[in-house]
Length: 439
Image (cartoon, rainbow, N blue to C red; front, side, top):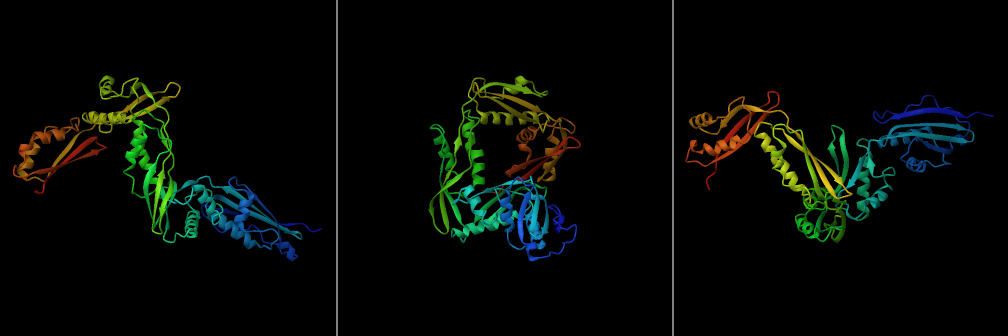
């Protein structure tokens, strides 16, 4: 009885993507049946089923195969970027050929977003694309050819729907050179997709008119989910934050087509919202402040215990504290709020952490745009001397008090530039004067 002949593993490493190498020579077959594929085995991957890998390979049991077929499959699997390692082994005997693919999944994948494919849900679009890109499941690596394959597949899907003018574009969001891509966004150009109206399922009777009024700014604009996400965060969420609904959350935008021509599509955007409950303030605690006492800082906070939390007002109040610190030379002082929500009694507490940073002192002052005589008068009047704690409010007060030193026949525009010297902890100030155009 003749023993089976075994070929040892051929490894494919994703990062270098070298040509797979066999570790021994292929023995000769004694009959045509030795090349007939009788068994396909897939191990190692947890992301895909064996049937999915077999479908990608194109192999079929009962067909004649050669070693070149296996090399080609290994190459194609590796080029997708979905695996960190790909290897195979095969054996053949008088009864036929058996092959095994050993795969290690690439865990460094990023989500894929479809920005304005308004004709399909995300899941329906992914399912349609699997006819062209069987391994695509809604995530992809930042390297490999899968991003380009998905682009091609999306173009095919659009063509099937008769959208011949539409072109698929891909944007890797993040810093590609630094390798910090956090998602891949696919969008359509060449076809105008406009917003007619925005609906807010889940919105209450109190908030709906406010949301509808705010949504008017987006009506007539391009439908792009990425832009609507920003719009919801910056323009819509504050409506709830002012009313103490601190857990309010908007879902992903969906589109309903209301009118369509070959050149233009009009949609109603649907932005679902989960409003959540209203919270009242229980307490505010300060920490880290040394330059200013807590009592003085607290005077700048409008929010009082037992009131409905207005998170927008609190944010404005904290921003207003920065100039106070900068008037003492603490140019990088920040106040970071830490929010703690108690859902049991509907209260919110804040811990306000102050990081005062280093104190900066006055450096050089430069006066530009004036004649020599006027510049000298301005410099002479400047009383914030080098080495003194810097006061960011001084320059504006100075300009107000010294306006009579400027040539009176000219209306002046003034710009102020503060340059922080991190090494010396000083602030160099440049004051630029420029005549205003006559009206």
